[in-house]
Length: 375
Ligand SMILES: C[S@@+](CC[C@H](N)C(=O)[O-])C[C@H]1O[C@@H](n2cnc3c(N)ncnc32)[C@H](O)[C@@H]1O
Ligand code: SF4
Image (cartoon, rainbow, N blue to C red; front, side, top):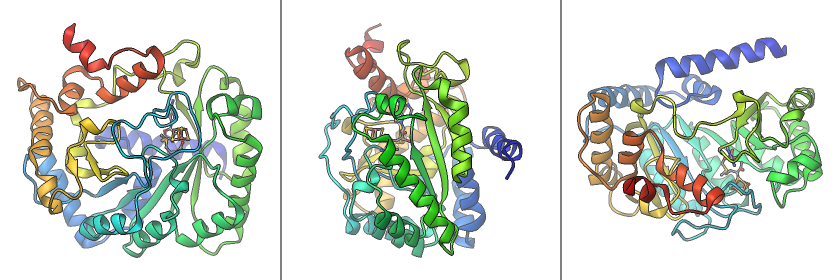
């Protein structure tokens, strides 16, 4: 596909997502809705959006998007990633087992359009990941992951292609060994590039033609000059989508100079329209049920997947409080003080763990919540 048409198509999906959906919708979400649907899923989807618009605290519908952290172990040391910094956030550092993943998928799988098999950590280090993907595919769920592409080998790539995985994002922040290895500490640029080229070569021979492969390039000051050339190289290799992503950093030594690739951590988009406590399930490698993918620390969890039946967890005090906070914020009603992460997120416009991440890593100060409360 011509680059211009490709860019126009991706921009249109972004525009639609900002116009009609609370969370950022990607090309993969659209594919999931089109190709992994069923009457049961559609009915549940309608119920979720109805509950969200009403601001219902207790719900009788299921999430349709599942963010499953299959591991919080990583082999790299990216300096702005808490996992890369060796911080556990109060959790056991472990791989989720197939049986644990299956138990959750058996409860919610019939309603899911989309399964994202990573949050923090490197998903391809979990030896059960192929079984987990295969199981989700049996349930007609769209499966995607983001990987640092270090653990891939020709044999592993074949298993990934055979598993039926729909979408893989490869995180390579540079178009040369010199720039790549500044952020992806411990990664080997030549090896990672060979792994991705092999995946694309095997995909050309594979009957399914999947997965869709996105190259995510986090833009820093040290690599922004390589963007254009890397994008050209990516499309020549057979990558389907090249995405320059602003880095979550505010440190002037690291942040890009180009304003298009700078993140305003204090101004998240469409905050008041957050739909996650109605539509997204987030389970961490230790079984913790998190409010969304932006929290990291165990203290911000809403419960544990073993706390009871799925509906008991989904309607526990934390989830109900979170939905109430969001609904009241939308109506501009005063908020009751609460310890849960959504309270700070709705009140200040700053997702709390995000700032904690930024501050812990860059400034090495007390967590942001404390700082804000005393100000
Ligand atoms: C924590 S990683 C886990 C998945 C996998 N290990 C990886 O790196 O792709 C989740 C996502 O965060 C991205 N990421 C890492 N550091 C980032 C930063 N400073 N700013 C924005 N995104 C970042 C990664 O590229 C990845 O897509
Ligand atoms: S590869 Fe991913 S999980 Fe690992 S340190 Fe880097 S960003 Fe974090």
